[in-house]
Image 1 (spheres, rainbow, N blue to C red):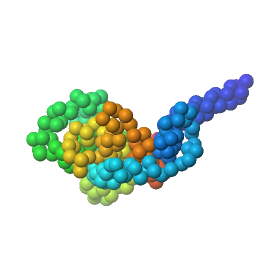
Image 2: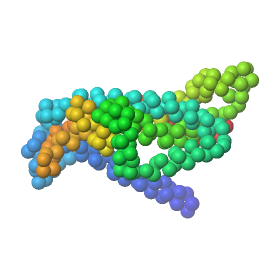
Image 3: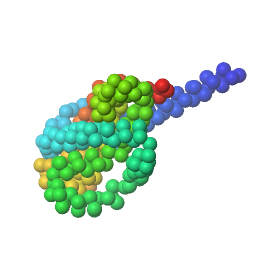
Image 4: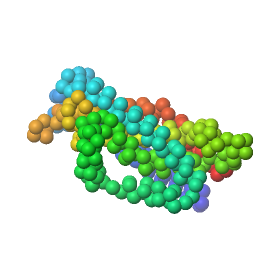
Length: 279
C-alpha cells in the first residue's frame, strides 16, 4: 500500500510539474506562433497554433517601423553595465554580511528585506528629483545607476548565501600563511563564488533588460529609449496593437535572456548545489 501511495504521489507531482510547465510555456509558444502569422491569419476567427502560411514579413515590418537595433543596443549597454557594477559592489559587501555578525550586518539584512517591499511608483518622484539634480535625466548612465541601486539588495542577499557556503577553514588557512583580508577575498573566496557571481549577474542583467517603468519615465528622447519602451510604439493612438510586428519584436527581445540563461545554466545549477552542501 505504501509503495502504491508513493507512486501515486510521485505521479501527482510530475503531473503538477507538467501543468506548471505548460502554463509557463503557453504565452511564449503563442508569441512565436503569432510572430510568424500573416495578417490574414491574425484576423481569423479560428486561430491555429501552427501558422498555415508562415512569413517573415512581421519581422521586416517591425525593423522598418521602429529602431529596434538601436533600442536593443541601449538595453544591452544598460543591462551589462548594471550587472557588472552590481556584482562588483555586492561581492565585498556580501562577504562582510556573511562573515561579520553585528549591528551593521543586521541593519544591512533588514535593508535588503525592506527594500524589496517598496513599489516603483512610491520612489519614482524623489528618484526623478535626485537624478535631475545630478543632471542624469535622459541619460543611460542615470538609468544604469537606478538599475544598480534597485538590484543591489537582492544581489547582496543572494551572494551572502553563497559566501556562507564557503568553508571558513580555507580563509583561516590563507590568513595563517600571511594573507590579508583583501587578498583572501580576491584569491580564495571569489574563485569559489564564481557560480554565485554568475547567477547574481544573470539576475541583475535580466532585471535591467526587461525593466520598463524607470526607462519610460527617465528617458525622453527616442535615441536613448530601451527596447521595452520601444515595443510600446507598436500600439496605435487608440490602443490598437499592430499585433504581427509587435509579436515579432517581442520575440526578438526575449532571445538574449534565453540564450544567456542556456549558456550559463550549468554554472547556476552548480552554484545552487554548492550552496546546499553542508561543510
